[in-house]
Structures are given as C-alpha cells and as structure tokens.
Image (cartoon, rainbow, N blue to C red; front, top):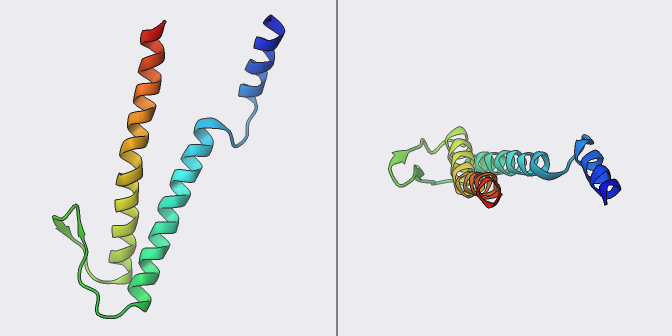
Length: 97
C-alpha cells in the first residue's frame, strides 16, 4: 500500500501539463483567443457600437477596445467560477480532515 502512495507522490512531483498548471494555461489561452477575436471583430466589422463592460463601463469601438472588452469579459466569466472552485477545493479538504 505504501508503494502505491510513493508512486502517486512521484507522479505529482513531475513537471508537466497536469492539474492546476494545465487549467491555468487553458484559462490564459482562452483569454488570449478571446482578445484576438475581439480585435478581429473591431478590424473587420463596420458600424459597431461601443461595448459596455458589465453594462457600465464603455469601451471605445476600436479594435483595441473590442480586444480589451473580450479579454476582460471572458476573464471575469471564467475566472470567478474558477476562483470559487479553487477556494472550495482547498478549504473543503481542510475541513474534511
């Protein structure tokens, strides 16, 4: 039984794209892709109105404005639930013991 535990400890110590690191990389990649998509929308679509972040903060209807709007929106929409999952998973393990 202790051999299996040692193997698990060795596997988690290996560097690579596993667990929290992979989730962080996916999160950053999604934010970057959304930023590029917003920039491309601002470049190729005519007649756009200024987007409003959280329905309050207006961004300029330029490629950089749409890139910032897209990146901030997806960062918030994905980041808040991700932060809650991290918080709960860390604190739930502490209380269960």
